[in-house]
Length: 120
Image (cartoon, rainbow, N blue to C red; front, top):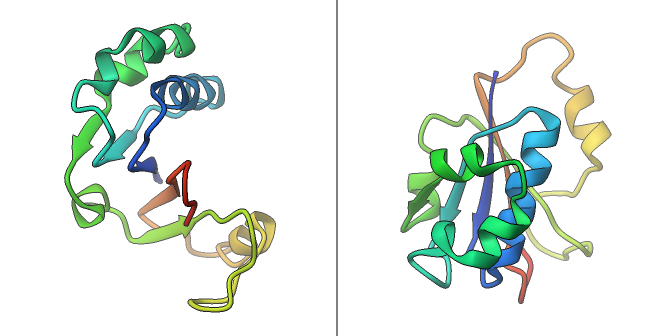
């Protein structure tokens, strides 16, 4: 199963590096940034420092303009939120979400985070 992590409108370069490092530790390497604050965020000093040991994840990362572009090849999206919402689909815990995949795993799943300022 393809697993992708998507950061939407990242405004803190260090968070991009930290995400890359966390992904590397967990064995993932597909990072896509949607409309980050800086076009060169993958090469910024703070990003590289915070990615300590995960430069290969940054090297492979892509920057795209839209969420649709980031979702290419993905058939299941798990969007994150810090607080419950009154609109949109019902929220579920990650455990509840994955429990439904017991028999048939999706071909590609993406986890969507961001933005730091406004959340989802």
